[in-house]
Structure formats: structure tokens, C-alpha cells
Image 1 (cartoon, rainbow, N blue to C red):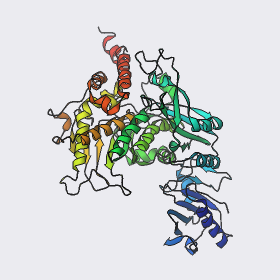
Image 2 (image 1 turned 30 degrees about the horizontal axis):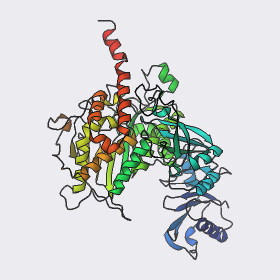
Image 3 (image 1 turned 120 degrees about the vertical axis):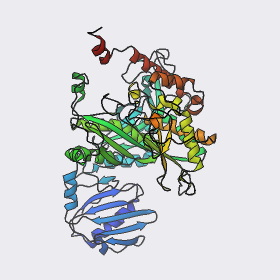
Length: 582
């Protein structure tokens, strides 16, 4: 009988449970799988047939019978669940459904390690990001067979900049940090140097910025065996947050929320088009005449999802194994377009997941010869790609309460929620550049395609910039619909949270609700329609530095640069329109 051990739960509990099984039934088959849940639960799968209800509870464990083939045992605050696998059909089901690169996930659980009967060694499954110390991390690395680490940080455009490092280099960096060339703050998304930068440039010589590893961001990469992933925060020469570090920006806003007594919960939705193209074919074709994953307008199509089931299962399973659990995946209206809903989490973890989802998708889809795009609007004849943010504030009690919910209110929204919403609407026009960061973002802002055109709110109204969803104590929340799939999650979450907190602090009053088609209403503040206009509004907004600090100056400079690059470009539209006839 193989021993399976789940990290995070006390080893003695797991060993006692498995030893108890072995003592009672030494002739029975191997333990096949061991899974650790976030709350310390361990799921042990066995085969062949085994009735664990026969097990007597251990001395320090209370046992509760569940059904004919399960026993549930608990020691202190560390529950352990053991289950018989029956005749092996459960394992066969996994083989039928799963990508061969990731045979780990079982029925929507959060696995950590497993033993597969077809392999003699350990294989890495899901390792949820969570607080770890160095000793524990070393043990996890050894047990997972981690041989190298990818470390990286996100720049202002949401691009993940990083590299592979050896374990020796990693352990040193984990203790004291490491140098990371600060050119990542001095160039744009195509690696062209800014000519208007203040934080770094030719005038500074592009020195190293100090990067510190966030051990809590540790993940094992399912599609790169033996490889861990970890994010960094950048600090300045005094040890404080680097003014261009988007992750540090969000941390500061979260700290402000906690100081006020609030915990912030967010969830992200992305729409994205997928194409049967490779990086080479995209460039060879000049990004024209691309082959979509599937043709036609098939929103919420069971058929299209089933026709691409292998890809869909890979997205769902491998993202969960990468600690980006997905609540829903479906087709949207357009050829090859899908929408994904990432499960809610506290603000920083949500931003990490949303930001990591994009590069993870691009790497995973490459195995299928597919390239996804998160452009806000890749084709003027098709709908754009949204990136909505769901959000709510919770108390910091041991059993948190949804502070947006008020059962006594007619619409179920609390006064605090309404002030939060009022703050977001107040700052929305001036903050648009932070939420819609590219030239292309504003091609989505046209009538009739679900994108908001003014600062509006409404109860369950998808034409508004903010859709208020009144439910119960768990589900009452706001859906920020202005953002598109090209948004930088760290900046977007920091910006919307800061604006909402400002509304609470100033006790702002919520204006009237928009009814019907909000985008056609004329009595609400309009949103900027170009990046140039949005950048000018942000630069003039006196509250922006107060709420978001020195980051605003750096960001405005980068958007001014982006505008100038576009203004000097000759587009295909201009060539087709003017080349011959004029």
C-alpha cells in the first residue's frame, strides 16, 4: 500500500488514518490519491473496493458515517476525509476527461498532491497560494520535485515580466530579494523606451530595482513539471513600495480599507476570442484573415462548447490546478469567443489570479495550436471583450458580514454600499484611463454593444456602467462593467476600491438610478471616448494623487506616450480610404 500525504494538515493525522486502514485491511489495494483542501481536509482515494465505514474512529478522532463507502473523521480543527474508490471507474473517468498532462483534479475539489497508480513517482497537482514560511516551502519543493522557479512581476500594462532561476538563486532571493532591471518601468509593452519617463531612463542609467518575492504567491505550474511560479513586489531604494509597482499600489489601497474596518472581495470576468493561429502565423498574416476557433455567432452554445470540450476541460482543470478556480466557462456572441468567470477572492489574491490568467491561457492554449486575445475590440464588426469586476466589502470579524447588504432596505443595499457606489460614479470619468488603458479600449465604447458610455448605475441593468445586484447576505454586490479584458487587474481593482472608499469617507450621496437603456441617457456624466481625452482628464483630477499616490504621475506619462505612438501611426483604414482615390 502506498502512503499519500497531504501537506498543510498535520502529518500524524494523515499517517494515523492511513495506518489504520492498512492495519485493518492489509490485503486491500493501493491508496490511489491524496488531496489536501484549503481548510486542511485530506481526501484519500482507494481501490479496489473498500468500505471505510468499517473503520473504527481513532482515539483522537471523531468519526461520522456519510454513506456506504465514506467515513468522515476530524481531529481538532483539521478534518480528514477518506473515501473508497470502488471498482476503479472513478479513476477511469478522470482518464477519459482530463488532459494527460494534468490527471489531478477530482470533482471540483482543491487537490494538492496525489499518487497516480500508473506512475511510481509523485506528481504535482494544485498548490493553492497561501501563507508559507521558508522551512515549509523547502519541504513542499522537495516533495513536489521542484527543480526551478519562474519569478516575475507585472508592469503597468499588465505584462508579466520574469525569468527562470535555479533553486540556489531562488533560496537566496527568497531571503533578501534580488535585482531586477528597472527598464520594465521605462519601456512600453513592445519594449520601446519612453522618452518622457521620470522614474527611470537614460538619465538614471536604468539601474536594478530591488524585487522581493512574495512567498504567499507560490504556485506549481501544471504545464511545466517540476517548476514553481512566484510573484515579486518592487521596492524603492529606501525599502518602501516602488511608485511604479502595480501590486504595491493595490496593497496600499487594501491597507487603507482594512484600516477603515473593511475587507474587500472581488471577482473577475473575462471575454476573449480564440484563434487557430500561432505567434508565427499571426505575424505572417499581419494579424488579418485569422481563423477563429469556431465560426458563427453561438452565444451560450452547448454545441460549440462540446465540440471544443478537450480545450474547455483543459482550461477548467488546469486553471484550477494553477490556483485560478473558474466558476463558469461558456461561449459568447461571436466566432470563437468565450467568457470565463474566476471565482471570487479577497482583493490581492483576486488580482493575482486575474493577472496570471492571461499569460497562463496563452501558454496553455499553445499546446492546442490556439492563440487567445484579450484586446478590448479586435474587430469593428463584432462585439468587444469585457472584463467586469464584481465587488463587495465585508466586516473583519471572525465570521465576516457583507456590509453591502441591508435586509431592512427596500432594495437590500446598505447606506454604506450606496456611498461606495456614489464614490465610484463620482470618480469614474476621470479614472477611465486607469481602467481602459489602451487606444483600442475606446473602440469598445460605441452604442449598442453593451459597453457603458456614461457614469450610470442601475439595479440589474446591464446597460449601466455599474450594475447593482441585490440578493442575500452572501450575494449582494456591485458589478463594475466599464472595464474590458485589456485592463490591468491590479490597477483596476485598486482604482475602483479607492474610489468607493472615498465615497464612504466623504459620505457621498448616490444619484438617481438609470432606467432602460442607460447608454442613451443624456442626463448622466459622459465617459471619455479616447485615450487622449481620458489621460487629460486623469492628469487634471486633483483627487487622483490623493487616492493613488505617485503612481498617477508615472501612469499619465505612459499613457501620453501611448497616445503619441498611435497618432504617428498610419493605419490600414487610412491606406484603404485614401491611398488610391485622393
